[in-house]
Image (tube, rainbow, N blue to C red):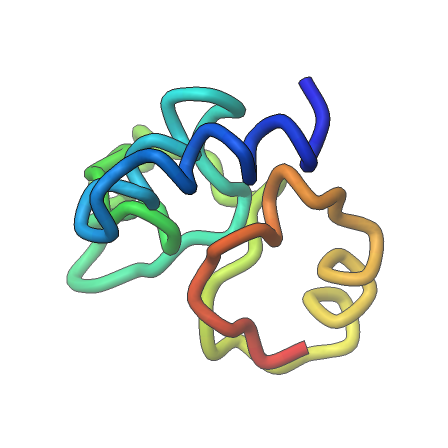
Length: 91
């Protein structure tokens, strides 16, 4: 699956459904939002997990608004599959 193909598909989808369509095509972004232990996809807002009981591992994720050297490095190393149509990350 290429970025060009994904763009051509979502161009035909209503704007309100585009983020969810991208996630359906390429998977949820590794860029996430974290609120009260609940982990959500920064692209579509779907609930991915819960960290309160240690049930979700954030080691392979980048949290929106987290501005450290490791997150900046991880953001640069992410592919278009995580970055495309995702809420702006700090890095």
